[in-house]
Length: 257
Image 1 (tube, rainbow, N blue to C red):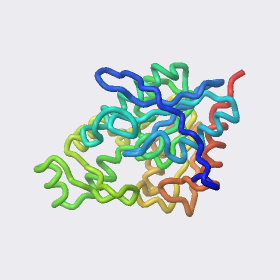
Image 2: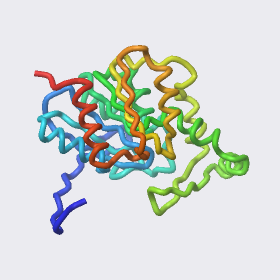
Image 3: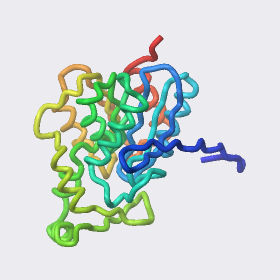
């Protein structure tokens, strides 16, 4: 939000070619380890938490990379055509091109799942996960859908889900559900090979806090911190929430040099 009618100029995105598509990116040079923002389902890289981290990176002289997945924000593509495989491939391509040396991955909601999946290849210096929606296509969508909605997804290929975050409904496609099953993680142990700090609101209607606990139970016995915010919602974008996010990122892998 801007006060007194003044508006901070929006830095223009740089388009990164990835195969036949282009991804919108914003890169702030600085000291490492570089911080990479992985946004949520139908979110974009200019959302509140990403902007707060960029402001911190500017103050702290830290490298910060953010981008829009295919079909999100300013990137090429149509949202309804995307799957977890597509968005994971986007994240891996951006990290390889713009933050190749052991980054800190900061994943919000779906971005938390993407960060955990990307960790095997990326070998991050740390993970900060905000309301991580691990396995959400199965556990938080499919398993919660009544039979009539499941039937619509399977027969019509899509169900238009009303969204409290957007005036337009969110398309939930059969391709999204079926592809998501290729990336499920909660069935066994998860070891990202780095420290993990999870921030989770206990008043989150989209990713209930017991879902974060299920993830914690599958992570290693050491190097994992869970911060529960009793009144916190899904976005965790209030001033105190943003302060906690910055502190988590600063604390998980301090600036080098």
